[in-house]
Image (tube, rainbow, N blue to C red):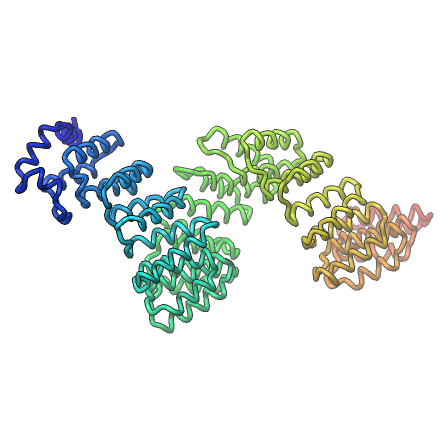
Length: 612
């Protein structure tokens, strides 16, 4: 039997406890009613030491029972430590801690604070607010340790900002805003609940600031996507003479990541090195992420190779980086060497396979995932559906859809859009429309997916109707949406509508047409026999026409037997790729169809001379 269990066995004997009480300076009876709660019975420290060695709830309850029998529970120190162990130990039991707290006669602030802290760190932080209300009804007075946990709880819950502001009012009434810990927690709460503007106002009005205060506000700007403001705040911080630390660097590097400013990110990296800042795991991860997202893999790899301790985030960042550069074997190597994996690295590697259009390997990886202890999530399903869309694997897509329903995944915008896109690209447009109608929430990408799907299946009028419905509900189309609409017009020969939508791209939606939009317009006009207008579109392009644009014009010329313009388009195609034998063959065929045999023979002879 261990020392801990022996001690517990001794304590479970009432006679032993009462004998221990008999040797105290005062009689047990006087101790029970002693109002001087600063007095600690000699054997209370023994009980507290047992709490630290307690490994199970059963042992804890034995100690609790003994404290009740001996009335040690009436002493704030011992009672507070009991609540603390239940609330914030490695294996907390929050309901039991609250039950103990409510059974105490006038529990002190420490007992309330540890219970509030326990719930603020849990998945149910709102209960910390309820405990605070109960605390206010009692005799204990909140102190500077109460409010940081309350602010943290309010920041974790999107719908509890009003409670956060009410708690802040109590801080003001109690005059605790001069406490730097309370102030910093308030900055964070204001940043989450009211935005960085509210946090900045509180920051500017306070004379209590340390490096944590500056860090909290810089990170608030990062989290709300205002990196320029974060960088400006850092320059103000430099003027005040406060020395940045590793956490400051994390915020600044994150600003560079959002801006994709590689040069500035490198400067902060050098600053950290030159000023002897510790390259903690979070800072190294932030630098790696900045380099990867800014398109510089080599320094990220150098940092990764030099890490003595790697976390799941470290490995996942490198997997994403390798996948971004198409180095999937290296990504797989990092993945396989990870001692522990949660769902995030699995999803990162899956997404990498999909991005590199290696759908079969993505599906194979999912089968591996099913044999592991990691449970797929909605992000996994989105990648798998994209892989099915690439492969045209309708059966696998149907299985994944059934899996989503069986696992009761919420049909989010991203997941619903992936389903709509998968069914459309796998040839089942009816199912795509059905899923689209069932999705509880749709965004621009969802509408774009159904519009492009309808267009690719030849349902031009339906695609245009969905486009108008999208506009009516106030969603803004992007360049991909217009590509679907123009494709629909091209398939159906809707020249006037095509002209109108093409003009609306720049005039109404301020979208600059891309090469695919121009090729759609050239194809639409060319099929309708409007060859001169099609050529004018090519000549007025703000970007250099590629082979697809000239190819669309060339095919139109061949269909409508405009030899002169066809020769011109073919010449431009050959300038782009003089060794493309297909262009020569098509040109020769155009001459044959126009009964220009001599010209066709010249083309065949030229091909022979070029060794084609």
